[in-house]
Image 1 (cartoon, one colour):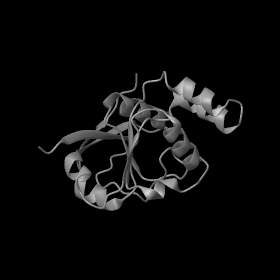
Image 2: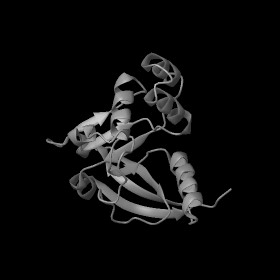
Image 3: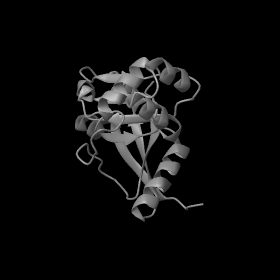
Image 4: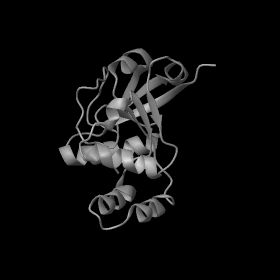
Length: 169
């Protein structure tokens, strides 16, 4: 059975043809096209972006052929199930501008959002130990983000469905 899931991209504009070129460096999972499978998370992020850029919040909806993607030979995956040592190392490495993300085409796992970023910052600046950071993170249920850094994956497995302008509360 082919699992096709709905995924969302938060922003301030409709993106019918996503690409990997319009990304900022030093994000959690490196540069790429970011999605989530949690609608509420996309709504919240689109509102944050809209407030920052003084534009309407927009959530773009896509269908992701996840089973086909996961069974295609040659695609390199990294999926983090929880906030742990490996996730922390990966995010810190990318935030420091290192290129560990280049080893993967598709990365999925927890978001370093407001609940998490303070812990990461404290760890990166040496104010708390690695053990203390992991201890703090283990009690937080991760949100989910997907970073696609390979344009082939976007072109072959992701299809635009719709975009919605979100009403601000």
